[in-house]
Image (spheres, rainbow, N blue to C red):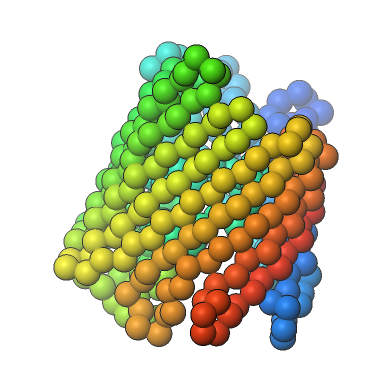
Length: 329
């Protein structure tokens, strides 16, 4: 299996180089190298993410584009994972159809590229309540997206194979997702985006390890919804979401609040808090609080540092992180 993954990666590189020589598809990628410590018992270096993706247009069909993506993580058995394999059918001013394996349009922060968000990690609730945490939220399906840079509305509706335990074997657990938001622009060049997401599937004996205890198998209705807000006002930015999962008569939910200030095009100060409450009795479910500072060498290549803490009253937990992100295309 390891030889197969290595061969696939080498073929990916070879195809990418050949494509660039022919002025065809684009090769993009970045690496995030991180040092983390809990200021007590654990300190470690890791490759948090190393991603490569190939994207381009189908020859002679320039209204169809595609993307193939692989990722390497040193903290997950040092393995390569084939993440995205998708095609977009563009409808000019009427949005696009997306099909293949990709992240469903659900939750604002999950849809923001990790190399662009001003914090080192997405909020706990975002990672826990996406529809497939086991595989980085990726699902197999079809989605319609309406979104244009000059338009205030963003909308989507998708249909996916909701069986995440065996994604190639559908047990009638079809997943339906939808997101809708609108940007309001003001005279002082500030803007506010408001919206929400919904998702539903009926599951049969499925494991949900980020919500229930490991080994639990859940059946029944899985309905998830969330609200979202994003404010830009001069150098100040504020983003927040609340997400809830209703599993039959039980509820898991959480929120985050993230603010950041751009001193100029190179320096950012961030502050954040998040809390996630699951249905696992062994989980503490404490709130996290943090501060961070970012130095942007370019728009996507940056040095990031943060300090976060939790459960300060009884058993304090601390985390300090420094990350270098190098982007290339």
